Amino acid sequence: HAEADPCGAAIARLSGDLGQESAEAEATTTAPPPGGGLPQLIAELDRSVVALAAQGEPDAGMLPLLAAALHGIVVGGGQAWQRELGADGTHHLARAAVIATSWLAASMRRRKACEEGAVAGA
Image 1 (cartoon, rainbow, N blue to C red):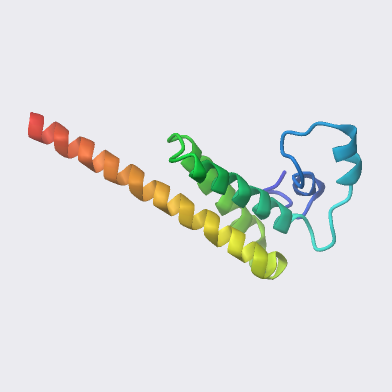
Image 2: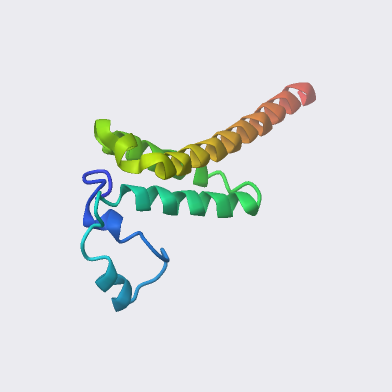
């Protein structure tokens, strides 16, 4: 749904606690906020990424999910995604992308070290 309509009600429902399944959350997020839900989506994504980064590197399965989410926001947002996100949203997007890039670099370094170790041991 987010890819099809980055400003739709599905994105708007992401504001607040992502795990909350209460009638109150449903009632407060029925209509998309003014300007769409994309800023709320990227703020939640950023908060999640920062929380994961505080715990150390995530498992390898998180990086493709994060990359897909970032790609969906940029591509799904069309040509106006920067305007819709505004300065704060763009900051959240950039920070999440920088953290994802550092995870990718660390993953590539580990893979290269494993490959070099395998060649040296052969």
